Length: 288
Image (cartoon, rainbow, N blue to C red; front, top):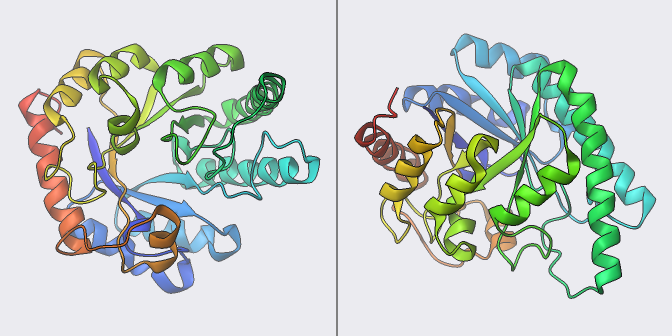
């Protein structure tokens, strides 16, 4: 397994002009991967970013941010097009940077929990399937996979659990679409996170390791040992990345409702969390 951290822990939005030093910081913390949350592509100089990653020999994961103006299953064609154009940029960036996957809740917009009619829900699902299929076909010759993230019921009304995710995969019917698991959301929605991982099987393309309170992994209620045992059972030897949000990054704290201090520091989330996750992986024989 390789271990990394998302840029949301320290900055939002991430900019190569202002925050490029985070690459070296992650390297010095012993991470393998730099997961960049791309909120505004205009703030990312891909040439400069790639050079920094290569200098520090850091792997990279391209992570999407899907607000209301990037809803690919929207009935508004302008909004859907904006999401499509953004995803194409992300896929091209992943190819250029060497990210094997583009991740995030790309089927809809975050913060869209609403009660819809059966007909509206079916139409929305069909739009997501159509758009994701086309994006998979665009990404496949570039060697890029798409991994969509299931979110909790307070953040989306569309895909909350792995069972729903597997249906979306079946409907899209492309080999390079899979699951982006997040233990925070799974803790809220799945009856049994380990069983859900086993259901995902070889379609688990990416894992976010997040505590139930968004704090340091290993300090809360997430059932980490069964989770790592299940990952070992399905043969997952991919990337495990910490994504957390703290009051220090105020724009994200507001968006995800972080109102109190959840960890000793941002560094503690990364350093202590990574040490814990590596120890769990080693316990089940999945360490580096």
